[in-house]
Image (cartoon, rainbow, N blue to C red; front, top):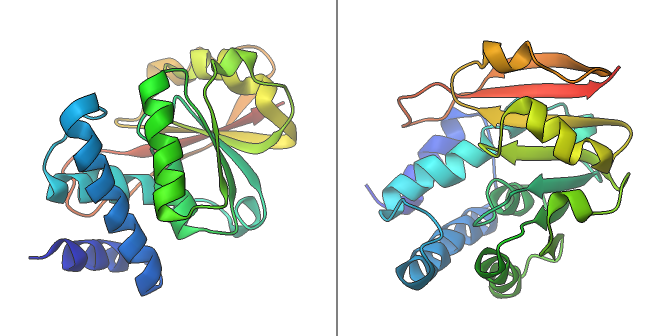
Length: 211
């Protein structure tokens, strides 16, 4: 099966209808990541077919779970973004999103800037900073993918939220122990299982907001 067919089938299984141009850009991102990986070791995954599942489809699995009102025209931040995951795939799939990638490691931010240029992603900004040093209140949503325990995620990134903003923690198994340790003033809004075609492992999206 070609990468294009694999991606198209996966998107269809998730109920996502992306234009052909967006799908081509997603695959161009995978090719760029594979190229940079040879030198900079941005991700442990080397096989492009695995990248389609574990990077593209896994990142995009958030979209069917999030309300449309949280997406169109909203300011999102992806913290501890690494190779731009999930922020770059989300920004490609939703060009109406204003996505900021926050990453402290220089080589990873350098890759993100190159991806922004080569893929023509005008809706992406790259901040090469520690999340704790980013100005408060600038975002409607902050997402993390295997960034930290939920309590640490809140402590490090909670200040980034604008009023009524939400934190989105992408997790594997439902982290019941972490959910029992939220800092005071925060509450869990939803714990949603995510469907990732081709991935035989649990995925969940934890939605958190201020009380």
